[in-house]
Structure formats: structure tokens, C-alpha cells
Image 1 (cartoon, rainbow, N blue to C red):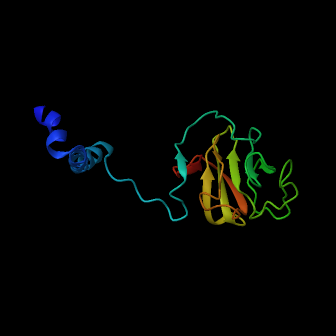
Image 2 (cartoon, rainbow, N blue to C red):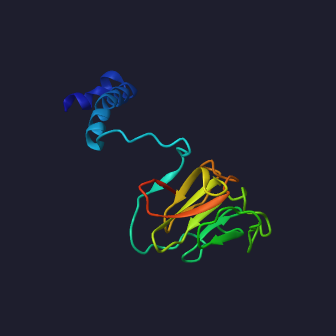
Image 3 (tube, helix red, strand yellow):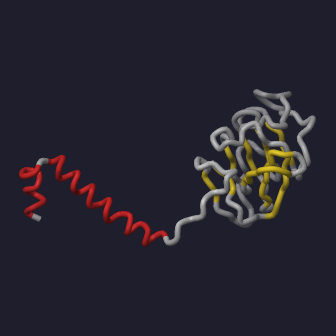
Length: 174
């Protein structure tokens, strides 16, 4: 105790702070690794480190942003811009256009920047970059929204939608 009071006088405040920080670096990783258990698996290559995930849940959920209950939505820009709502799986977005805001009239295919899931029946939205549910994909849990597909590397890439019952897959969410 006396050393801690005299240390700034004897060694200088910066030296004491540096020594304390060094001591924490030696001790902290041991304490953290003991508390969290095994290291989590690496994310799939189709995921971005910037994406946050949502834990699965069951039962009724809140609606995703700006998307009618029971629907799965894509947005031209933000969730406040033009949107396209889907109630069921879709093999391709050929001929589909956004409506109701900035971006209305533009093609949905490979042209979306946000996604939302307002399913109340535990159906995940699985959005694919290929038609007929092929290629890489990401999912959105019921009640969740991904406000920026650009930030997670999925902007202007979505070509089809497959609705699935809840899976163990970690879905995107903001």
C-alpha cells in the first residue's frame, strides 16, 4: 500500500501506469480465457466480421423495420426507402421492382442495400446471390433487420429468397 502511494513520487506517474498496464496484460488473458471456454469457430467465408448476429428465438416476434407482418423485405437504400415485400420463397427477382419511396421503379435483382424479416412464424429469410437459391447466402432472423448490406459485403448481390424454419445458422442483424 505504501509503495503505491510512493511509486509516482519515486518513479514518475507514467512509469507506474505503464507497469500496471503491463501487469494487466500478463494476467488478463488468463482470466478471460478461463471464463469464456473454448474459442468460437471461425466465421464462414461468406460472412463479414462487421456483421452482428442474433440468437435464435421461438414464438411470436416483433416486426422487422418497415416491413409488414408476415413479410420479408428488401430495400433499395435504407429501410426508409423504396421496398419490395415477399410473403413466400422466390426463385428469382427478374421483373421485380421497388415501390413506395426513393428508388421506386428500380429493379430488385442485385440492387438491394437493406433487408428485414417480419415473419411471426419463425421463418428465417435466406437471401441468395444466385437465382433458384444457389450460391452464397446470408439469413435474417424473424423480427430482425440488416440496415446496411453494404457494411457486410452483401449490397447489390441478392437474386433469390428461400424461407426456412429456424436453423442453427447465425443470421445477420443490426
